[in-house]
Length: 345
Image 1 (tube, rainbow, N blue to C red):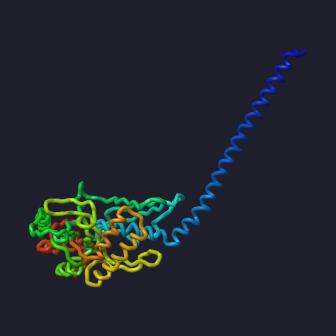
Image 2 (image 1 turned 60 degrees about the vertical axis):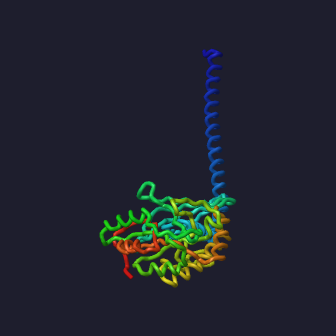
Image 3 (image 1 turned 135 degrees about the vertical axis):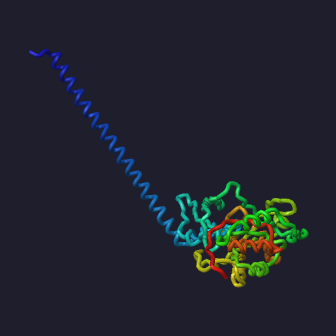
């Protein structure tokens, strides 16, 4: 006959097993309940995010705000950086806005070398809701410490005498060019020994088989407008605004018509008119570091003659070589060399 203590022991063991099974079931039920709660919460948050971001993104695109931001960035880059341009048509639909209403965009940068548009890097830009536009150029420099200095401001624009001395850069580039065979094209930029109208400079350049893509515009820098500058002997360097080829925009800031270059009287006239519109539009619609300086520059240019003091050109090697012989041009810099791809005039 089973003892009473043995029976109680079996009952206790049986109860413990039941309790363990119940506890395990309770733990798994709790875990599943928590998992479903977390999942439902995440789905709810995602739904709220979609309900918020979809109309914001649609409005941002449909209202033209995205195209406006792209235009702001491309105008900033092209009006202050020598030798590079923004792929504005490839830039379409690249601007985005995030939940914190920070705008961002990126675009390809290129140089005009002959008839090629040679990719040289990328620009990325951001604008926080209550901040200013910040952009960064990521250039694929071929050489370490590649020269990217600004144009030399014509001495007469600064109230100084004109110098006819040859600089070391001209002698070095002349030596480089004479060693390059026919069958190549290059991008080059140079300064002028005196300030002149874009039409006058275009007239001088028209004697050569090259295409003009930029001209630095004097906006009173260092004389009436305070900007950072550098000096090398008698020469003064300072960042200025750039006259670029005419680009017209529609009422939603999308590119609608353009000239490929500054070559020719009609292209120059249209580009100068558009220059005023672009800088006025930039000042009115942008929020960027040099906004106050641009106001002063624009006021100076309107009050004085529209003067340029250099150019960015591209063409066959032998034509670039001929430009070196022009007395009015100096401080040459090469921006890129490619195999022949040129439509002769």
